[in-house]
Structures are given as structure tokens and as C-alpha cells.
Image 1 (spheres, helix red, strand yellow):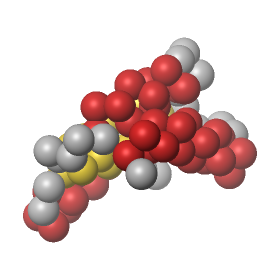
Image 2 (cartoon, rainbow, N blue to C red; image 1 turned 60 degrees about the horizontal axis):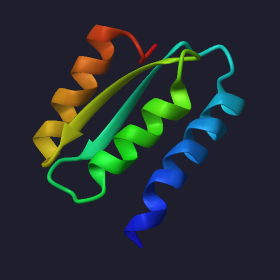
Image 3 (cartoon, helix red, strand yellow; image 1 turned 180 degrees about the vertical axis):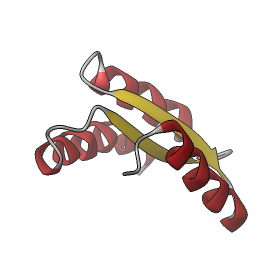
Length: 79
């Protein structure tokens, strides 16, 4: 159900905080052209507030995922 996506994004972010409490930058992949993408983006940004920097990338195909991880490595959330 699409109306739950935003709430799940914040819960996932909180779980990640518990797993990696020292993380200052978090990379997020969102599905390009999905009706839920914008709601999840807004929810994640609100949940991150000033605690973490988010790098949110929209992906649509397998090649996009490889490019996204290259961007994450370049910009910092993957160590």
C-alpha cells in the first residue's frame, strides 16, 4: 500500500541509525517514476533533519544502480 511508504522510510532510517550510529552521510536509492518516490523522499528528509546528510538518488534500471553506487563512493556514504 503506497500510503505506508513514507512511514517506512523513516523507520528504515531509524534502524540504520541503530546499526551505524556514527554514520553522518547516508545514501538512499529510490525508484525513478514511482508514485511513492516523492512522498518517501520528503519523509526521509524530514526524518534525517540535521542528524545526517542524505544523498538520495533515483534509479530505474540495473545500470542506474551501478552508477548510483559509483556516485555514493565518490560522495562519501560508502566506506
